[in-house]
Length: 489
Image (cartoon, rainbow, N blue to C red; front, side, top):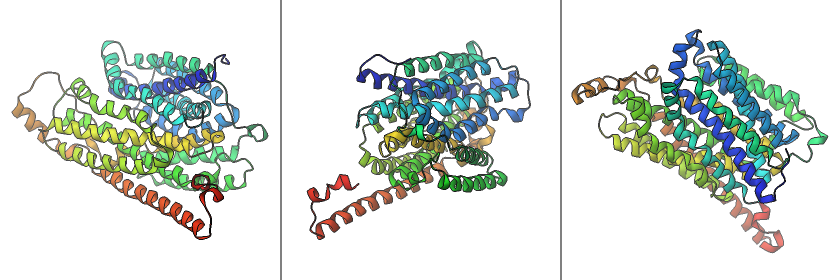
């Protein structure tokens, strides 16, 4: 499967592998959400199993990503991307053939395991395939291409469920997974140069997976404190194991990298707010204004497109500016989410609602892109898989938190007929549902608080750099004598 092209072709194939793989994962997620009611009606099984079609996938993906990222560094990024795409595709076939709800949940867990490999391995493969300084833009473009799934996913899911079957959603991901394997196979292999000297940190892998799994379970059911206790205990065991391991799964020094930690934490805030926005606005259009699913999906095209272009924009941000730009994005997103929240409470002003949500989506898209491109730019290239695995695990595990922050939401979308209703009747019906609609108050406040904290980090970093520079000057140093400001960083 080795490639026989020049260096330029190599990183382009790596970019396409990441783009197609991420598109496959995004399309599966966004298209599936639109057909879950149909799945529930057709497949036999307990109603309580339906949420696990999504939760089971997120648990597996989020918990396994740190292990997947390190495996990519140790055993080869291209190899792990191929394995992940193959597992994802085979699991999609099993999902399409599922005879019952428990079978579908099990297949979705396996699909989550495949998805856990795709993103960390793909990001690390592209980071190491690109020449220094070119990885950010290449990654941003790949994320932008993958973001198209955000736009077309709900339409594809609804169209397939109406014209064919919900099973077609899974069949559609199979050729995407195959294309990922083909593109990855044409890129050069890369791995951590020190990988041959150290095996996988099994103790770290077990405790990290368990801790993240428990954390994800607690975020799904905040009242279940057993999950929280399990996450705390396993987290403590993980830290202890990593301190003793000669070649840890995750080098704890990574968490002393202030830009990395800041961008990852801020990305988690942005990701949770994005999930909330993707849930609240379409539901408001349907449940609050009486629109059909198709009408709401068509109206939400603009916010979805704004979210998709965030990746390419983030790829153009210099590493040194990533933290201040992240603070700006969170601040803009918080203000736009607050405006969106205010406009969801009135039956009129749909254009204003869509404009505000489009602004929020644009800011959140850049913030989400920075969480991936920015963190890859501030870590060592040889352990890029490890860093991307941790970042993606944090983003995935906290994804469900976005829905929890919106409130109960009234139990989901209300079925709306395609027929017209009078404005008075529609207004009366909509007014009775405002109390049950989810709210963007907490996500907006979270973004604003995050913006303040990230801005403080940026100011402290600038003051620390200036203080160090003035200290060198006061001691008679110079830029040339001290090796330059950037070398000190």
